[in-house]
Length: 177
Length: 159
Image 1 (tube, rainbow over the protein chains, first blue to last red):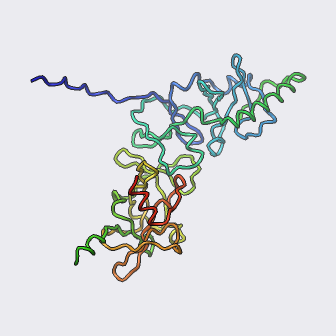
Image 2 (tube, each protein chain N blue to C red; image 1 turned 90 degrees about the vertical axis):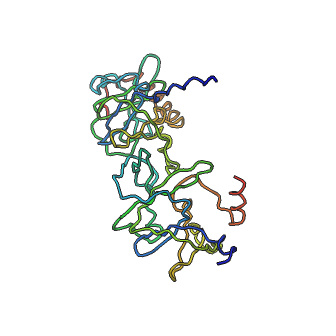
């Protein structure tokens, strides 16, 4: 009698993540979603004011190649008390540059639990789910969740207006908040 | 006891919130655990406090006392882990309670149209009439259309 070959035990699927801090709260993001990490001081000279932005969380934009990215203050996005940010994440395949307080570490998650259906607010767009690391629960952010389509439309209008102004006066080199 | 009355009996877990007792169908109760660390993170679901970690599972914590007895619990002795059905998906929710829970058998009387949406029915125990709670009306989740009891039974039987 032939026995079927024993199934090889599948190694758990893992994902590299970056743990980062915003106003004392720890979040995680897939490291594959982060294209580049820069210090705020490093990009301050390239940021442009968006005086007509209706979004409190976005006050500046930055030109990267042929694209305009919007600098999102993560603390304001999550409704936390803003603190001076020190780093910026340029998020891959989005138009978001995310202002954060700092990086805690890079690590690996083996399990991502979907957010309970009891959570019914905006957090369903903010988070891919939750993961447990060292007996602590960390929300894993959705890179596309920082700016909705509606918000992007508003920002593009504000950007057009800012571009028109900058044709007459140069306002590069904004102080990032 | 006749066969007819035996079949009408169901199991319920009695839980205490402050001075009052409420009941949940035992089939919806998974576990009673000591309070543990609540992990809080930004969200916009005001009824939820955060999540607790139990055997690797992250469970939303919802204090239903304020809605039922008008104030938050002063002391939380346990978290009752209950299951909630969201459409086809079963999810867990942790409910802080202020005392021991008790498993009883009783016959449930269906709620009437005059009862609050969170009342699924009534049971009588130890000379006390106790509300059987409908968790879907007390804890946040996708909006469910509350059907009258006979239609609800029909819908559940079909699902």
